[in-house]
Length: 282
Ligand SMILES: NC(=O)c1ccc[n+]([C@@H]2O[C@H](COP(=O)([O-])OP(=O)(O)OC[C@H]3O[C@@H](n4cnc5c(N)ncnc54)[C@H](OP(=O)(O)O)[C@@H]3O)[C@@H](O)[C@H]2O)c1
Image (cartoon, rainbow, N blue to C red; front, side, top):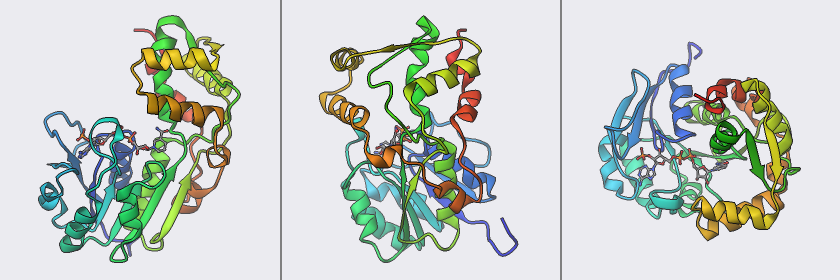
């Protein structure tokens, strides 16, 4: 923080999640105060100094104490099982205005969610849509297969991804929540390189110091595997489309992280080194 920047208090929703906990960490690292929202404070595990508050985004009035005295709010677009889109955006924003909130970031959750639409239509706050491509953290879904049988079983193994480190999503959100100049922006956030599934597997193998076999599945075998894992049919349809026909946005590297945060985007090698233990037996 420079001398002209003031420490601010920010409310982070989704704070126990993959991205939210990185927003919390990046705000703390920049010297700001963080209030973290969760439906169950007893289960939450935050770094020292974080103020934990109970609240449920499906019941906006439960957020009144959480909003008191904050200058910025990080929002998610879903609440409850299977990322059900929140319909409560307008009321959440009304309460945010009443509390004096000046900046809002929203984690994009797929095309046209009602909460994101409400944020974009709000001219009473400086809003920023944070639009990451595939999270590097999705690779943790391979951890069980790697630990138990030393293999990754995937379809479409030559698909390309500009996957992004969760910490960089948190960093972009933290800057947008606390500094001028990011209002009305939609930030696509990617990592620094394009990777195939084979590249990702090789990177994890190097980080854990042991080979991993990559087994290419047919589309039918992949669908059977996802059904056996309990994925609902709409999620399976989404995965088939995303993997078989990755949109250009998901396979194009952009320099948002460096432009917004002043630091280059973190590579998958760094992510794999940080998470190597998850891919090792015992
Ligand atoms: N995975 C990817 O590659 C990818 C890429 C781009 C975008 N996205 C988007 O990222 C989002 C998922 O983010 P994530 O992975 O960080 O989420 P996550 O790890 O699944 O965490 C879910 C969070 O939502 C909170 N939550 C759920 N319902 C709530 C409610 N009713 N009230 C308050 N909090 C509630 C949970 O808090 P508590 O349980 O503590 O209350 C938890 O912190 C989705 O919108 C997805 O579309 C994902």
